[in-house]
Amino acid sequence: MNKAFYKNAILWGFALWFIGYVLGIVLFFVVSPSMIGWILTPIGVLITLWVLFKKISASFEHYALLAVAWTLIAIVLDYIFLVMIFKPADGYYKLDVYLYYALTLILPLAVGWYKNRTQNMIDSGT
Image (cartoon, rainbow, N blue to C red):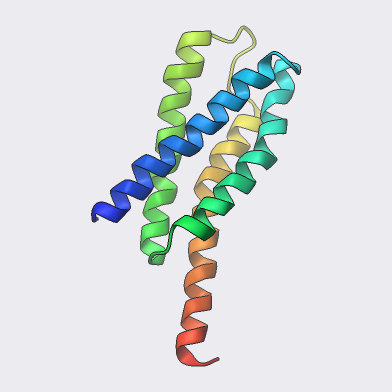
């Protein structure tokens, strides 16, 4: 693991989580708490895809490690800054949260596979 990995893992992992955190707090005052995750998910997916396609270029292994790092960052920070601080009365962990964690793991893997497959096709002249 090199400096680029740590930058991509920690900086982008925290930035993506923080964007969702802030948007979630804003949405809390506008929509029902049960709808926040469902509204944030497509926004988060688009922002994450933009980061993965435009800001990160690396091996598949790099993307795989990012998937794990970003997922761990999301789980730990959610627990500290949402579960422990806000103590949601009806609980925090519902289908939308599990979907968010799954997408946080799957998106870097999918983009890494796609980008590396595409690069290999270009390199081989196919």
